[in-house]
Each structure stands twice: as C-alpha cells, then as structure tokens.
Amino acid sequence: MLSTETTSSTSVLVAEDDRVISDVIRFNLERARYHVTVARNGTEAWALLQTRTFDVLVTDYQMPGMTGEEVCRAFRTTYPQTQLPIIFLSARGLELNVAKMQEELGIQTLLYKPFSPRELVEEIAKCARKSIALL
Image (tube, one colour):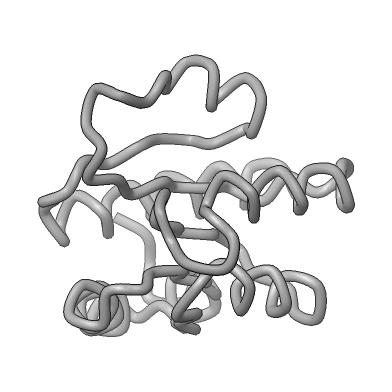
C-alpha cells in the first residue's frame, strides 16, 4: 500500500460516461486519498489531457464522442514521450485483444465490468508506484 503522502498527491483522470459507475469510482478513489477528475465522455477526457497533467488515466472503452481507445491513441500520438499509465474498463469482455491494446496503446491493464472498486484502487496504486520508480 502506498503511503498517504504518495496517494494524496496522485491525480487520476476517470473517463466514464455512466454516472453511477463514475460516482462509485470517484468515491472509492477519493476515499483512498487520490485526487480525482471525472470526464463524462471521450471528447471531454481528451480536452482535459491536453490541458492538465494526470498521474493515471482510467477510461471506459465505449464512450460517446471519442471511445477510450481513440482517446488513448490520440494521447500516445500527440505525447509519445509521456509514460501515462492507462487502465481500461470494459463491458465487452473477451471481444477485446488485451495483448494488442497493451502493445499498441501502452495500457497497464483491462478490468472487466462489473469490477471490484478495491481491485481498481489496487491497480492504480501499482501504476503510481511504477510512475514513482521512473522518476
């Protein structure tokens, strides 16, 4: 587990169009002492990624405006030097090729809906530890 000092300074962008899911994610991440910003669609997430710095991106795969995949492709193309950890959330199950997404988009993991909020918090903690180790 990360120390309070580490997690309290970790900024997470959550791109999720389902308000109930985004509220559950925000509640659990804030309880774990992360700074959380929620984008309600892919277009909003992309705009935020262009104007602010985040330590971790958690994105739904299917969203209006831009999909999570489109957001990640745009980010990786525009900012290729940035090592932003990305966690995908998806209800599409086995339809997605996780290995291909990890290679092409640099995602850390994919969590299938419904997922455990505790599992998401643990995955973000892993991403934050990797980011700190790179500094």
